[in-house]
Amino acid sequence: MSHRATQVVVLGSTGSIGGSTLEVIGALRDRLQAIGLSAHRNTGSLLRQALEFRPRWIVVTDPEAAARQDWSALPRDVELWVGREPIARLVAQPEVDVVVSAIVGSAGLEGTWAALDAGKTVALANKESLVVGGPLVTQLAKTRGARLLPVDSEHSAVFQALQAGRRDEVRRVVLTASGGPFRTYSDEQLAQVTVAEALAHPTWDMGPKVTIDSATLMNKALEIIEARWLFDLDPSQIGVMIHPQSIVHSLVEYIDGSVIAQLSPPDMKLPIQYALTWPERWTGPAANLDWARAFHLDFEPPDFERFGALALGLEVARAGGTAGAVLNAANETAVAAFLGGTLPFRQIVPLCRGVLEYHHFDPDPTLEQLLALDGWAREEASRWVCSCSA
Image (cartoon, rainbow, N blue to C red; front, side):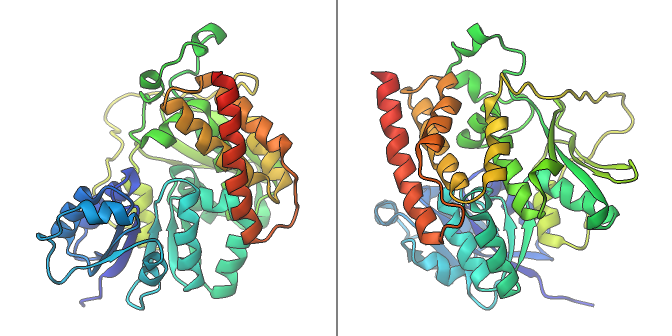
């Protein structure tokens, strides 16, 4: 029997996750089709993707970047939309089945929100959507009959392991972390970390922002907050273990003592594909473990003093309210400053804590308040950067 291919919109198609998503779609063209793609400024890559995948629509959210690009080679059956507003129109198209939310940072919240508001299935790679607006986002999905499926490897692993039992049988969830490139560095070495060193992740190939977050373990802090809302967990049920090989992506411990883990090579194509094909599993392009060779798996508890981001993540998961929006905005600003050479690596997390503690906490904010606080936190973090570099 023939069946209709799943129609996929990829928001942030020119980024790391977006590129991997298109690799999956390209390998499964009989079952998956890219119907819409979006990019911010990387218009050259977007044009090449449009030529290869022939979506019905592409969106460039930066009008100046769109104006600079020569679109004469764009196929006539591919429609170009420009600006941020068309994102909501794109994800709401009736033909769209799944929206991959892969725009990095809080900018991805807008697309996630619009897709859920339209009742779509969202394959969520943008963890900031839940870090910033957790209870509002999950309530919107429930109200609209939409579905959130995780793309982060850790949350995909939890999602898969949770299928081994009932939710009331879960004791805790353990997210694994590689520990990044500086897991064994001394304080003196951490004080001298360069941008190039921080971008050299030992196991994963990711974009610069996420790679820096992995080096500070802020990525894991944000994932703690994401897991709290995505799986409706009490923060006390969420733990972290350092696992340098990045093969066990997360574990779920049940009340009888059983621990269910999901294992696979560090390749984002697997969790992306599972989110696109759930509840089915298909043969795809992701790498497989080689069971014909010996290997070992190491686990160790994290050093909360060395990596203060983890404690910050747990605090924000417990607090809820406006805390996630402020932490995320401060971190995005701090990471950009580090990448730009104006903030030392070791000051990223202290800056985030300082801005978080300085803000006026609200336990029950509206979306508009969260977006306003996002702007405030960025301005405040920028002032901290200036004082650190003075």
